[in-house]
Length: 152
Image 1 (cartoon, rainbow, N blue to C red):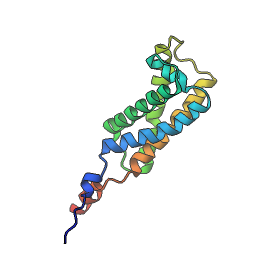
Image 2: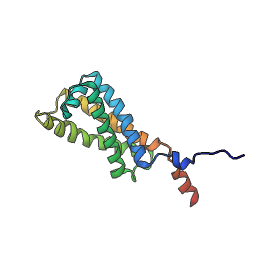
Image 3: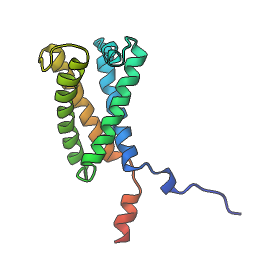
Image 4: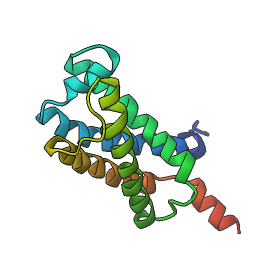
């Protein structure tokens, strides 16, 4: 008697899915730091709220978006854990400048490109995010890699 089974191909996350998962893992870690320092309500202010829940939702949505764009821009180059993590760290640095030093302060009516204690903490959070994004992206199992390698 044959039993129904699900093909690993159906279960395997796509490269985009791996990037989103990496972005969410990094976003959770960074979010915990932001929550501990009281910054999450400021993130909610980006969409006109001040609640912690909205701040978390906005932060995780941004984290997933950055994970997806990481794959679109650099996925083909992130071929090992070391390379992927290095690229993730560099990409996080870009987002620190773009997001934390320019876009977020501008959106909230604050001075842009101010490097103070909060900005340095933000840099550490962004680097943690990038480290986890790159590592998780590289480590999420994607069975088609093995199939393609064995098909040659």
